[in-house]
Amino acid sequence: MSKFWSPFVKTLVPYVPGEQPKLTKLVKLNTNENPYGPSPKALEAMRAELNDDLRLYPDPNGDLLKQAVAEYYGVQTGQVFVGNGSDEVLAHIFHGLFQQDLPLLFPDISYSFYPVYCGLYGIEHVLVPLDEQFQIRAADYARPNGGIIFPNPNAPTGCVLALDAVEQMLKASPDSVVVVDEAYIDFGGQTAISLVDRYPNLLVTQTLSKSRSLAGLRVGLAVGHPDLIEALERVKNSFNSYPLDRMAIVGAAAAFNDKAYFQQTCKAVIDSREHLVAKLQQRGFEVLPSAANFIFTRHPQQDAAGIAAKVREKGVIVRHFKQERIAQFLRISIGTPEQNQALLDAL
Ligand code: PMP
Image (cartoon, rainbow, N blue to C red; front, top):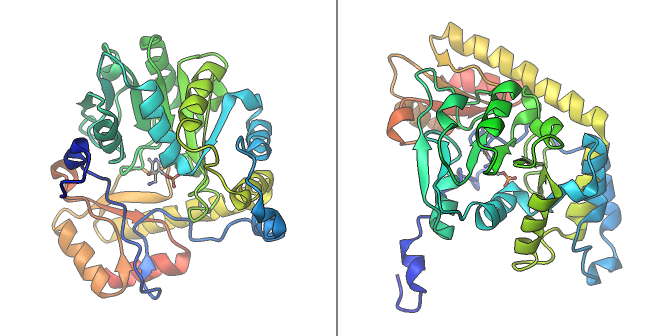
C-alpha cells in the first residue's frame, strides 16, 4: 500500500494466474495450454510480418482477423470483436455491458476472473450454485438479473451445457446480455455462435489460447449482435486503440484459416483426454465428464493438495484451488500422451 494509490486500488483483489515456472523441465499440466504447437502456417505468417513495417502502427480494427473469424463462422464482420486475449474482451464486456441496476449472475464454481472484474468495475453479482453433480442448471438463471455469464464448457469443471439449455437461458432473460465464454468449446462442445442471428442478447467469447495453441500471442474474440459489438468497440477505443499487434493479427488470421491443423490437434487432445480419464479411473479417481482440454478429478481417499504437492516433487504441475466446495479436486490439463504418462507415473 502507498499513499500515492487511488483509493479504490486498495480495495482490488487481483486474479492469480496459474504458475509459469522458470524451470523448463517440468511437465506443465496446470494452465490449460495446448501441448501441441501453433499451426505452422500461423508461424510462417508471423515470420513474414517481422519486417520494417513494424515501425507502423497495426490496423486498429484488426480487420484481417475479423474477416477470417467471420468467414469461419459464417457471420458478418460487424458481428465480430477482437482483443488482446479473451481476458481483455471479457474486461470490456464487464465494463461496457454489465454495469446495470440488477446484479450479474454467474455460477459459484466458474472462471475466477469474473469476480475480479466485478471488483474492478464495481458490479454487483450473485453466485448461482452448480447442482450436486457440478452442472449448470439453466432454470436457476430465470430470475431478475443485469446480465449472465458462464464458461461453456465450464471451468474448472470441464462440464458442457447443451445448446438447448443455453437457448432456454436466452429466452428467459430477453432483456439482459447473456455471455457464453467458450474458451474451451472446440474440445467437445457445440458453439452458441449458431444462435447469434436469432438472439440479440447473446454474446459468445472465444480465445486462440487453447484450441489454436496461441496462448503466448494473446488473442481473443467475441461474436454477437452488431449493437453489442459496438459497445465493446466504444470501450476499446476509449482504452487502447491497438490491442492487437501486427504479428497477432496475421498469426491469428492464419490460425483460423488452417482448419486441417486445428482439427487434427483438437482430435489429438480429445483422444489423449479419453485415455487419461480411463487410466485415472482405474486408479480410483472420480473424473467429472469433460468436454475441455482439462479434467477435474478427485480421489475418494487422498487429499487433493497433498497429491498436487507430491506430483510436483516428481516434476509434474497440476492446479489445485483452495475454494471450499472444490478443495478436494485437481484440475489437470491434457498433455501429450508422454506428458500424461509422466503424470500417471508420478501418481
Ligand atoms: N475464459 C476462461 C473460462 C478461461 O479459463 C480463460 C483462460 N484462463 C480465459 C477465458 C482467458 O483466456 P485468454 O485471455 O488466454 O484468451
